[in-house]
Image (cartoon, rainbow, N blue to C red; front, side):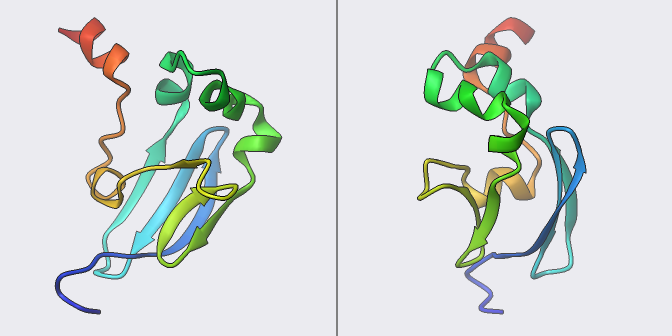
Length: 93
């Protein structure tokens, strides 16, 4: 591993909208995407609430993606398990 890069080495389903991610530095996270998807106002993102569409994730070059990068997240946000949608952050304030 290059000390300047971070990659996801494996992903597996951990729940309905939860994925267990393993990173190349040994860190593991279970990330729940439901709140992010539910709070999105964009219909293309909300479409991933359809379980079969959500389940179409894959790893590409160490990144978690859906489709042809139709949905993806900054790897550092996944690493820290902080993918809150701005609307849900406003509601919490």
